[in-house]
Image (tube, rainbow, N blue to C red; front, top):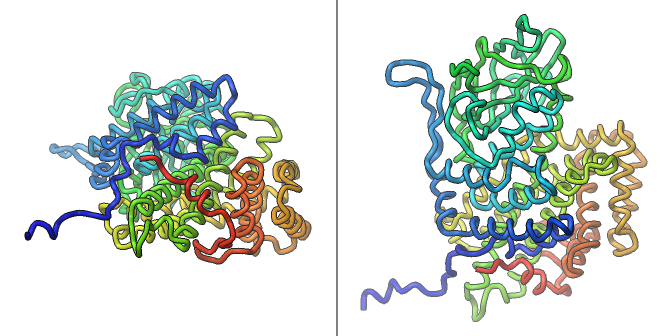
Length: 544
């Protein structure tokens, strides 16, 4: 009799053992839309296999263990020698190995590589977002290194390799390498030009010695780093190898690891340079211009990462409500809960659709696509990353008290959710970048207007939003004070135009009504009740 009180009923089964890719209709549709026909079958099969990996019980456990066992810093060995090594749980290395072998660092050398990688990165974020940092840094370093053909020839094959080797030894002796980045300093933060790290030229004209510090160094266990330092000719970009060619350790003093809100499986460090050997990348005084392509690529990864977190949060919420019963029926069938789930699903699909469109622009590489990215990337980075936190919090609430308990996995998503809005330039930095593009690059605005104009006439609310946006753009007086509002509008109009063109009508209708037409509230679950919300929720349901 006593045992009957512990009978478990009315609880959903774990969301494991499923294909995370094919269960995501917004993502599969975007890949089918943007991947060339001759690559589609191969790409879809590859992503489906990776989706099954992401949904497997084993890989999900790796993600949990990596998060629960954060890295540890070992500054010295037992004999007192300075070693500056970061120790990770074995699950971290297993995850990184899977990520590298799945092509998350090889987009630049594969046909349709950016769309395929973007979809895979979005999937992989749902397993454990922390290991996305070194994967993102390594991927993004390639265009910066290409400013120096000799360096690119040496390092690019290592960075785009699909083999993971965590050993600290000369990069030339390894089948693959990872990269990190160091830009910000204590006194400067986002104002990287305020950096004080000094670079002293060596006689060969390309090598330098660095002296200074970095307040945030991403992925300090990596094989190489792109850093900014003040050379005689001004702020310059440098490549700092972790291990020198003769096998000796470069001077790379890790002072401490950051104790972060989320992203706990990943190491972020404060580092000191004291006679550290570095190779110049690009010309002296052009450090920001050299590294800007790396920054742009990592900003797109912020969008992808937030889209992945949102998708996982929505999948968990819909899955829970599809199995949980309350007040005489399934939660998913209750009109008010259905409204909440549909609203979350619309936000998630809008983020995914925009992120894959930007990845496709990288694959295209044409002049107009590059111009579009100049505005669309910072606008998307600003808006999508800011929507991530309210989505994960609301999704957690759909699980009730269960969503506040660590075992549900939802608190991990919530803690991770603010990161991408801060990383690679917080909200104001993105909004000001959009303003600079509007003021200095007419081709960027022209490319943006051409893109959203493809949906004109398909929805009157979108048409009205485009008209209002044009009115705002006609008056650039005092634009900095309203840069956030304008950036938000640019992102929303672009998302709306893509959904009107490509999403099911019920998804586009809900988005345009609530995000562009004013027929929605400030909280989720305030969509117009007359809409076909059941279809929206069904589209977002994962197949367990």
